[in-house]
Image 1 (tube, rainbow, N blue to C red):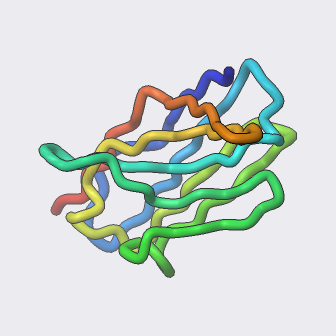
Image 2: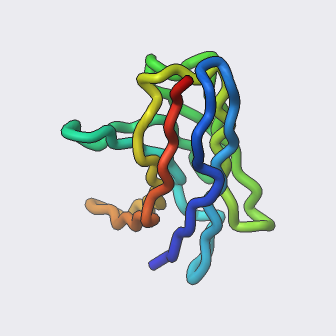
Length: 119
């Protein structure tokens, strides 16, 4: 099991940037696939980006070219750099840690951090 704490959310104007951080503790961080998800009011929680322990990344189509996920295994931290932010990026952003086993997986979530894009 891993504990996750997100920081870096806030209010930003359209076109602005924010960087989210997710600090992990309690387990071997480097073996986890890390991800960022987001949930807007009244909507389901959606995948934003993931990064494997080998550094392979995936992105939702809506954020490709604007967001960048990265990780620092020595610091047990995953980041989400968000540029060219749009009002539709407004949501609570959650950090996720996923560990694969043979035939199943486990995952842990952070408490979430609010990102609001508004003028």
